[in-house]
Length: 376
Image 1 (cartoon, rainbow, N blue to C red):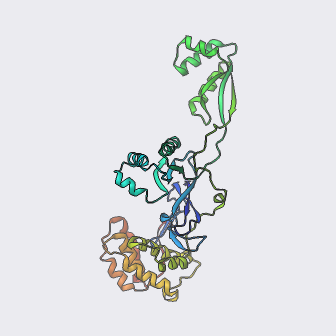
Image 2 (spheres, rainbow, N blue to C red):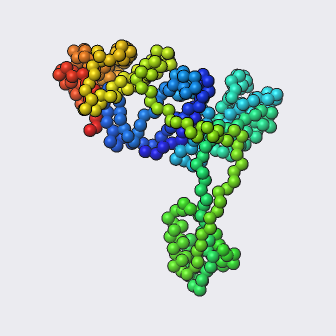
C-alpha cells in the first residue's frame, strides 16, 4: 500500500477545512469479503463518502466539497491547479485567454466568469501554472494556485573526480568508455579538476559501477552535498499552518449515516444506494467476529430496519451483484423463503455462483447472520 496525497476539502456550507487521504496503490492481500458486500482489505481501505462538518455540523458529500489545497504524499513534485479569483477590468483580454486555455467559445467563457473562483486548469506542472498566472495577470486578472504542502526537499549529493592519480591512462580509458568520447575530449576533461560526474543521488546502478571503476583505476572520487534549489513560490501556494494538524476524515458510524440520509445528503439512486450500503455495513460491523453474538434486525433500531428495507427495494435483481445483495438483505431480515426465491432469478456469472450457493444454504438453514464469503 502506497499512500497518496491528502486533499484539503472545504465544507460547501461554511468552508471549514477537512482532510481526506488517498492511495497511490494497494492490494487485496489478506482481504475478506462478507455476505453483505463489505470488503475488509488492510492494504486497500475504503474512503469515506460523507462526513459531518467540524464547523457547522452539517453532513456533506466529500466529492462536492471545495478542494482547498493538497498535502503531498508519495510523489515529491505534485502538479498545480490554477484558480482565477478576480476577473479584473479588462474582460475582453481575459475572455480571449480563457477561450484559448479552456478551448471554449466567448459566450461560454463569459458564463464561466459568473462563478469565481474558477478552476482554469487542473494538474499542470509548476512552470506551466506560473506561465498561465502571469498571462492572466497581464490580462488584468488575479490568479493563484491551491495551497500545497510538499515534503521537504533533501540536499543532493554529487560525485567529483578530485585527483587522477598515477595511473592516468587507466582513468582515461574508464572515462572514454563511459562518456563515449575520444582521447582529446577526455584530456580536456582532466584539465578541469575537480570533474563533476553527471548524476546525483539517488543514483542509478551504472553510476555506482562507474565510480567503482574510477577508484579501481586509482582516481580519487569525492562527494559534495548540494543544497536544494531555491524555487520562487507561486501566488496562493503557501499552506495555512492550521491545515497541517487536521485529522483525516473517517467513516461515520451507522447512526450518523442514517441521519445524513434523513437530511437528504444523497442525490439520486446511486448515491442513496451507496450510503444505505455503508450504513448497513456499519450496523453489521460489531457482529463480524465470532465472539460477538448476532443481533437480529428485529431487535435493532427502527432506523436500521427501515434502512435495510429501503435498500433492498432499491437494489435491482437483474444486476448480479445487486441481486445477491438484495437476497442477502432479505436473509438478514429473516425473510428466508423470499431470499431463496430471489436467488433463483439473479443472472449469475460463474465467479459468483459459489457465493450465491452459500447464501442459499444459509437461507435454507434459517441463519440470518452476516458471514465471510471470500477470504479467511
